[in-house]
Length: 166
Image (cartoon, rainbow, N blue to C red; front, side, top):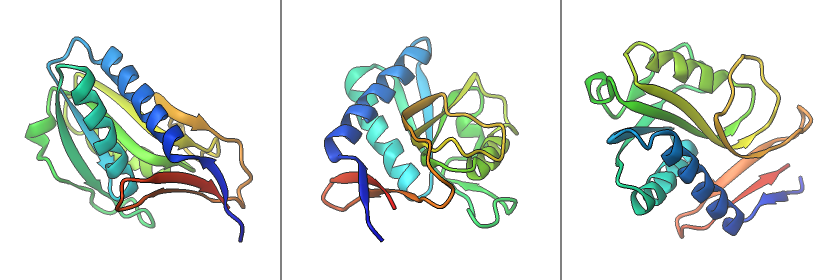
């Protein structure tokens, strides 16, 4: 199966920086925000956004890892922060790829159990094949792909990253 690179490391860095600025614009009136990254690639992407946000703003950024079973999202969701730690704060839910919207909608539902000042979503790649009425407020790139195509984002241990379509 061939890999078509859709985002290079440099392009991902640019998109990460742009998303960080958009988040800062949206939450400029807040003192603290929570970046909740969906486990694995979404959390790595959230960390990259957090690094950029901390360098461009005075916002206090808290990272939260969201553990969700992507095959069975109705199962209990676990977060690295307690509900009290994100109550009445601005929160951005982050994932690498928005495919059908299943993972994102169940994660959104989890965070709606507590009052939040503002709640936004961010993804690196939005695939435009949604089963649920969920959208990304901040996105790196939108792709209209066939359902047979697969988008994968790779963050390697050397800090390099790329996204490909297969």
